[in-house]
Structures are given as C-alpha cells and as structure tokens.
Image 1 (spheres, rainbow, N blue to C red):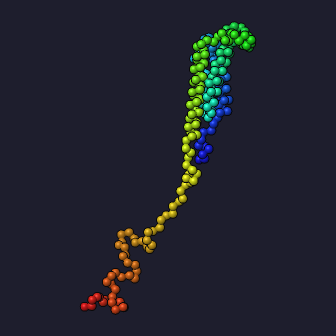
Image 2: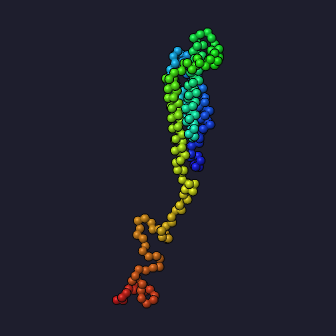
Image 3: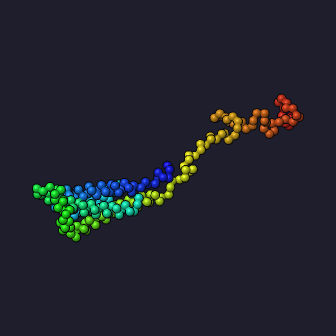
Length: 209
C-alpha cells in the first residue's frame, strides 16, 4: 500500500455541492411540512441542520472552513424554507396561485420579516450549530488519519528472501534408523587394534603369548 492511499482524500468541493443541494431540499421540506400540518414548527430548523450536516459529513471534507459553510447553508435553508412556506400555505388555503403569492411576498418583504420572531432565530442557530458540529467532527477525524504515522517503508514491506534449506550437519551417508552408527570410517581401527611389526598378521594379538 502506498502512503497516499493510506491517507483520506479530501472532498471539500463535493461537500459544498452536496450541502447546497441538501439546503434546497431542506427548504422544500420545510414548506411542505407547513402546508401539510398547517403549523409552523421551529424544530424543523434542527432537521435542516442535521440534513445539511450529515450530507456534508458523508462527502469526507478536510478543510475547517467547510464546517462554517455547513452552518451558513443551514441558516440559508431555514430562511428559504420560511420564505417558501408562507406563499405555499396561502396558495393552499386560497384560490391564488403559488407564484402569484410569492410575487407579492417578494415585493413586500415586510410580510416575511413579520412572520419571524425570537424563537425562530433561536432554532435557526441550533440547527446551524448541529450542522457545524457534525461536519467539524468529520474534519477532525480526517486530519487525525492524515497525521497518523505512515505505514512501514517500502523496503520493509518487501517479503523476506526465501531461506535455503539447511544441509546435513555432517557429510557422509546417514545410518538407517535402528542401527548403531559406526564410530570409525572404513579403514580405521580403534586404538589398540593396530598390530606391531608394520604388517598386520592373521590372528595375532598384542602382547604375543
């Protein structure tokens, strides 16, 4: 394994793109929930923050600034969701079209800002903190993996050279199992077995009788 493959690859650009898409999706879900339930739930802001944070978390970012982008996307998503929820609800309850009511809101932004209160901003902040913490946790994990010691050097990763089989400790033929080994090689006599007189005789012993 090469050193570059052991380190996590940053996905900062991918995280921004996915976070932007999650922001749009969260805003749309905010408007849909408002129309379906006929109520405005500030807790949806936390859901938007979780959606943005988890989406950007999955992209494996490596820059600290991505966590700030996640918090910013959450606030924009909450504001956009609130902005779309008003014309969506009015269009659902009346016979006016969504685009018509949206045009009125664009030209009269006071209608939008009058619908916001302190609790709304509070939950926006909570959602932004949730998105920031999720993304920042992933960034810390990526940096911890990148700063970890690299694997062993390439030289140390080479397999060991095959060992040659060791030869017999002593040359010469091996005795069969179960037979006593010969203490002396051929042509050798034990001490005292050599006869005096230079030439060995037949049946002679030392000392002569």
